[in-house]
Length: 425
Image (cartoon, rainbow, N blue to C red; front, side):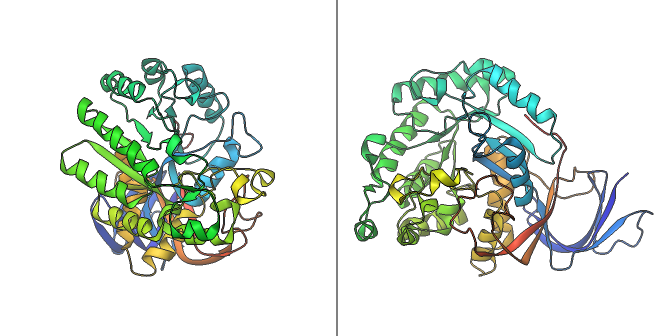
């Protein structure tokens, strides 16, 4: 029997909207007791002085990429799980764009068999591919994937064929699974790699107009209005998109939406460093886009922050900005950097940040949100907001190191993550 007492820890409970200092007793992966001061402590209890530390429900990631199978040089399942644990994530939802793609039950069975042999306090779920090979041309056997146990359906890539998209909405309606779409028009994007505007001109890089996102988003919203099928909107990155989503929610459409942590923290001005790890898709927005995303999250127009962890090797990313593949790692860095930039500066409350990283992503995935209360499983994250460390290759658990914060000092670090062992779905 394992017993741990967290003395005088700051407990964030977004479900109950409480933020308080308390003692928390954990016995065999379950919350045994919470009180302002626990005086009766079982023999053999490990006591941790947690003054200044923060305890919240385990973080939940809506969508990220696994290197394995097919791209193990970027990320293995082991390194991915270790990265998630180091970042405080107890639930991880993986996109299906592996090699081969997760578009059939056999591939899901492979993942499940691999995860059974790994002991980690992380529940790993999978998005099943909406289309075969995530190529956007032919619908996958969604019912078979649902029966096999995928969490929901998403390609993680744009689906340009609106007729196919509409059919997938109609077909998936009876399956009762989440569906997620990235709204982007590749024809309008062209060869653009930064957001169109004054800064793009200064950078001298090919630009992508905001309408590449918003035109596709408007089309998807019309399909949702026609079918009345709930969906999740991924990677929202423009101010106009926030307006469209706000209007759609006001009309009663059953939609949720997320942006990524890097779009919350940065805008196109950061690209003046030409760091290839800032080559993202969608590209970082203009300052007004970043402001709208922050306001959208605070107002509830946007529901959650996703990590979209996208590992690439040193060789793949150490090229000119325009030649770099889009994406960056983030599981280990998102919480401390968001806390330092939003909570430590008093722009956001601690509860507001934790809500967008834990309880709200869970709701978007049709999962029960985590809470800290006696009798509930200890699916929790202990975080030190003042711990200083460097994001070096040796310190990062991810196999890839493609982050613009590499070599920089980070304030805030996860101390420990508790969750269900060998969890997978």
